[in-house]
Structure formats: C-alpha cells, structure tokens
Amino acid sequence: MTGAATYATANLRPETTGLPFVVFIIQSCLPRRCAQLKVSVSPRINHGRMAAYVVSPFGFAAGAARLMPHEEGFLRQWVAENEKVLLDYWDGTIAYTEIAIEKLVAIEFGA
Image 1 (cartoon, rainbow, N blue to C red):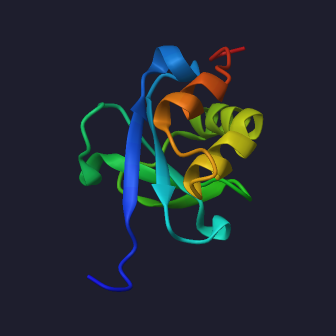
Image 2: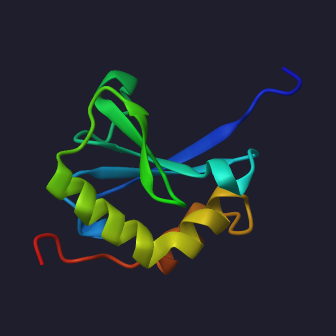
C-alpha cells in the first residue's frame, strides 16, 4: 500500500527497562516529531490494553490503558535516559533491535 506508515515493534521486558510493565519500542518511517513507544502489562500486542506515549517531548498520545501518574513519572525518567536511542531506533539510524537494546539504560523503579 503506497503511502502507508509501516512500523516494527520490539517488546522490552521489565528486567531490561527497570519498569514494572512492558515497553514496546517502535521503528517507523514517520518523522521524528511523531516518535512514539507503547506500554502494556502484557508482552503480547493487545491494542485495547496498551497506551502510546510520545518520546519527545514526552507525553501521553493515546490508548485505553493509560498508566497511573506515578508510573508515567517512571516512564518519563526512562525515556529521558534513553531518548537518543529511542529516536535513533524510531527513524532507523539504529537498524537492529539488538543494538538498540544494548544501548538502552534501565532505571531503578521506585527509586
């Protein structure tokens, strides 16, 4: 389909991010200003139980399962620590998921 946005997602375990939920990082052909990630309590993609967040500037984008304010605070902290990696993965500057994962920094949830 010509002109359609394409996305590739990779789910990150809580052990990788330090967060108490699964983070889906996304690769897209859309501009950086649209860079997003998704979160879920489950590693399976279920759009009805996910929320999308904009990477920069950080903020809630959409979804049926928005995080609690304190959880959004931890996600905001994690995104700030990893913004360059997330943006580079989004636009394909980092082409491979394994490389992105190696560059990501976990936070201490609850710290």
